[in-house]
Amino acid sequence: MPSEPAIREAQRLLDLVMTDWRAPAVQAEPNGAISLEWEVGAHGWLKLTVAGVGTLEHGAVIEGDEYAQVEHFGDHLPAWVKELLRRLLAVEH
Image (cartoon, rainbow, N blue to C red; front, side):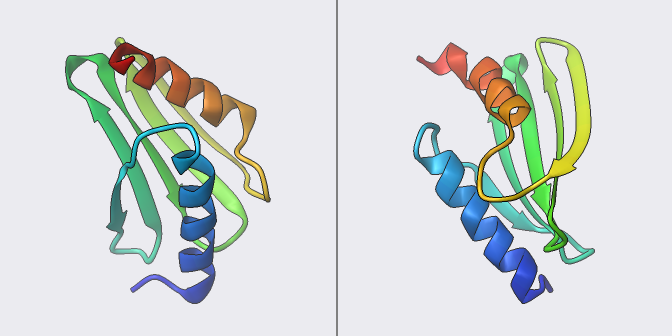
């Protein structure tokens, strides 16, 4: 079960991504983390994960290129996460 800090981080992350992009699938992970995931058919997928510890883990496969990173997560969405969302979801516009 996710901790209160993980739930707060997930809500902040949702608030940040919902201003510019479509809603993701949200899932509680077995380790207590919370993941947001977008899939765009054969184009790829992106998964953002928070665990209430001040970091944002992201992994993606977009047009065959793989990405994975852990970044500090504060009040703003990291620039690289924005770029991955743009690359993945651009095909929908």
